[in-house]
Image 1 (spheres, one colour):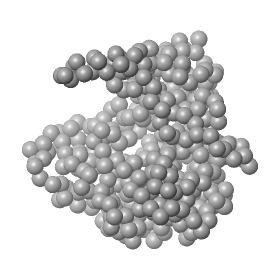
Image 2 (spheres, helix red, strand yellow; image 1 turned 90 degrees about the horizontal axis):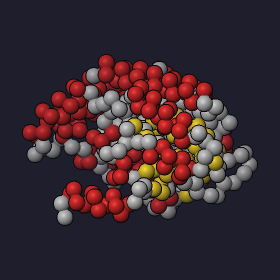
Image 3 (tube, one colour; image 1 turned 135 degrees about the horizontal axis):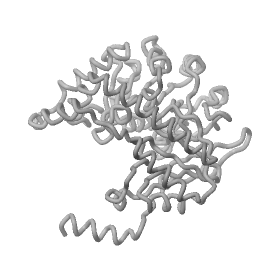
Image 4 (cartoon, helix red, strand yellow; image 1 turned 120 degrees about the horizontal axis):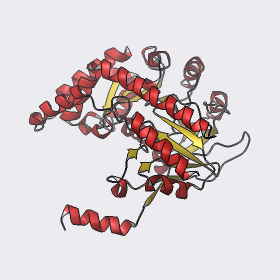
Length: 384
């Protein structure tokens, strides 16, 4: 069966729309209440909607990238695809070390930051133990830990959707193998204040390693003032994950990195490798993107413009979003999740719907201004 026939058959098999149940948990709970129900994230199957989608706003992808310089670097690197990229990896590591103010020994590469989250969970939770993190939050690290026998100790977010650092500290015990903080947080988009987080990291890291996921940090106006990377140079057992998937517009090219103490990096690389998962084209692209500061700054500006436009429009429709510091925003809706997602997709707009504490929420990624106008028009129709 050729590819076209296979796609046609698959689409018919899927029917008018296919839904994927993603085992993410996103369930904030009231203080003192134990939440034991897994919530559901729905996503329309991209196999069906790839052609029909007018606005793909479901994966927090950067619609503006990769930059022209990155595209050229990748194109030029294709001819060296028969060679391993160890030299390029070493060069990229040296660039990242200078950028983060650490030594090359403090950097580990991986195919996206999610890969590094999962590898860290495998190494630290291979003999069980628990992971302390906020609820809701990004779940790749937690789900990997649970899959290999670890436990999750969820701590509800505060009313402003920031991390409850005091309660997270109280949740740490002798079996805690890792403390995970996604900041800014996904799926809520909120930020936890930098000084409070810094103090928490210094204290908590004496009990267990602290992993700070900063995938969306560079969308903030002043990312340098909010990163926890300087703690690594100070010797604290803190890990920082960054990615080229978001502001650099390289989600499909899969490059990320970890900043951690040399001892912590060695403990991970003694079991798993990161560099071998990267192809030479992606490495060349990442190197070019670091050098293209003008493009990154422009993406930050364009993303903010789309975010402010979308916030104003949905508030005018009676919705109230969680103030976002990222490339997406989330807001509660008064419509059943699956039917709402279908109404949006029927108009060519892909979004994500979360069930949070039994209530539906819409998370929309920031696209181009035209895509956000398309989203607003679809939202009006879907909620009429």
